[in-house]
Length: 170
Image 1 (spheres, one colour):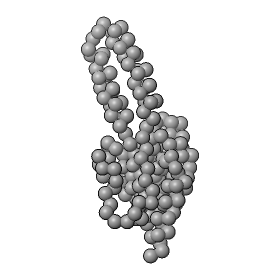
Image 2 (cartoon, rainbow, N blue to C red):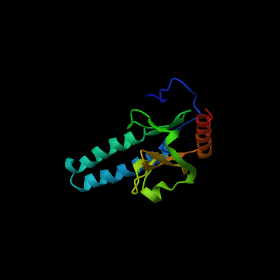
Image 3 (cartoon, rainbow, N blue to C red):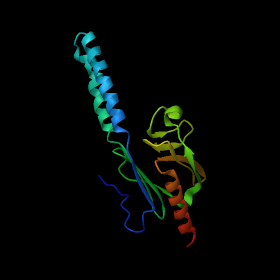
Image 4 (cartoon, rainbow, N blue to C red):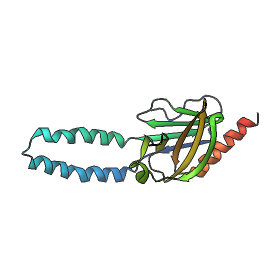
């Protein structure tokens, strides 16, 4: 597993790895197992009704390994969702129209944490943070909204500000 965006030159201004609260997720698995076993027992030990359990649990266990890597380099912001994204997604400073720290409410707004597209077209990267940095990007006239959750949103915002200042000072 590659932990870095693989950039050879420049310096990292900010780096964070977000992981889900594994204890909470494990409690969820432990709570669900008796429900499925009881359901299977009541339905006369049919393997057909055990099938959803055998499909859901592996996906749930894979989700325990999820991580979001966020890096700010001198040229932009890099984000990767492991194990689902292979390369880092790159968001250059040149395309940033604006950014600000915001309080997030992922469960209330979207019903979940993780990587997802919002109903209004925005993208959110967040596993366990309650705050993050909201971006507006322009790319060929299109405006794109992205939110990156962070346990340290002020440090992320500061690193982005420093990166933009370094780029504009040349």
